[in-house]
Length: 200
Image 1 (cartoon, helix red, strand yellow):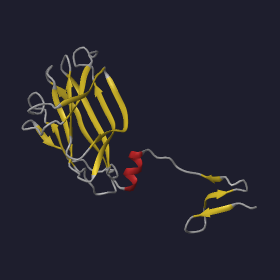
Image 2: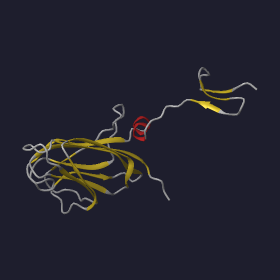
Image 3: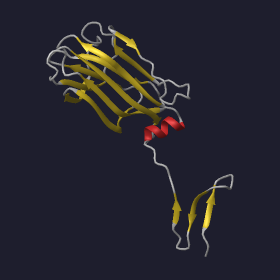
């Protein structure tokens, strides 16, 4: 029996075939979910706090993101963080924490609107986001919320792939704080995609 071939709509390309032993032969391109969402729907976004200076040793509320999409969940994909080790000794570790249920700040912030990472799409994140404006001791909030994650970071750059394992449903918010034993400079980036929530 000869191979049976499955072709695309133009009839010019064999996308798959079934051989005489009933095995399916095909080739495929693998994309991670963030790349797939960026290409297909454009609902992938990035929030940043770039080259900021911690002027003291308090815990500073730096970034807050709230999912305002009633249809889609927010899937956190990547957390990137850079720290200069302190501007005096350059070998001090800084602390980063993530909180759940962080309330909206009342002062010392600017609003951040994240565009799609697919620059061919005119889309903006269905989220409410604020970033510290470098005034005072971080964004002014009634409370940080409930601490969910905490870690120490030495001098350098860290890229942590979460892969969508942290899911932020509609109406939920997350906040990120930074604390260090001396004045220093840092940057922070959060990548996420939005996908329709599966109803149980």
